Length: 443
Image (cartoon, rainbow, N blue to C red):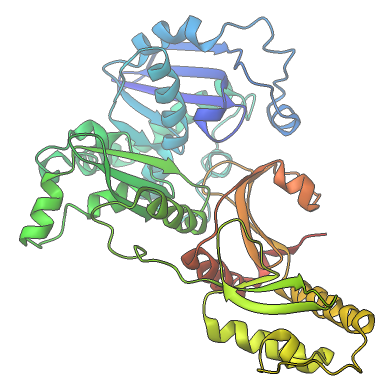
């Protein structure tokens, strides 16, 4: 017994978006035996690009029921059926999230017609629903609407069944059963809820405290990999016995998962995370004016509530940068605390000298760079953005897919600011150097 489903939404993340339309085709393994379709008022504004894609606008759903009004009926239709969708985890995470918000517990077995199609029809160039419909001559009415896509997916499922699909389905359902490898105190529901997307995962102990934070390109696969190793050592077994729950935060890309992992380790200081748990020693070049009216540059350890002209992980890097400024802009080493000299020559004019210092600071900050790292997310059609401002990691978030402005003020309306640390600074710098095609100069 199967439920073949398609939904339309206001965006890609269920916690911050709503469902605008749902269609459910009930299938008994031989033929279609029922169908349900309805528009839903999502409770969120529908972005213009979604309206352009689907034709569903705020006016379209103004008089439609809310999800809570149809949740019971949806739950009844889906219960005791294998859940099927094309790119199933997108539809599944949305429906599960909104059912859970309305008090309905739902953890079905799932099948993805995209993955099934790879087995049933190997060798195709692409396995998107549109391409499969074209290659397999599946008629589609109302493409990018829940009803049209669900009906097309149902026909695709029929074709998969005819291509030895029953065996393929059995194999896939076996792969989804990981209960036998789980730690003794971790319920299978914790694993079943994990999506196949990038993100950060958290292991909790019996009291709910976070004891380990990790990052993943694929959350479910990475979490399961913790339980499949052959290490039977005392420390590992103790670690496994202390895992009572797994929670997670989805990330648009693997790169943003790396960044968030570092942020969360510094925030929670988990018991079983051993890397990144050390006192960081940042250095900065600071600018100040002395009693004689001279602008002076000095290297010092970074401290809270102070903002240096530039930050460095290593003291040697800070010294090299400052000496370069001294030579290039003819600054006095003693005024930069690079030489011990009690008296500054009276021939130095403070106004002219201060202008050189300002030029040197501007040059340094411009060279450190203000740019964005833009990537396509694992799911959805928005843009992942990591902003670096004057060489310093500012934050990250998702931009609309049609965003064309890269003004910092505009970008920051979509981004979450995070504290920078040594690991993030090194990671962002390395990633930017290796992926120059993903860099966008910020105005």
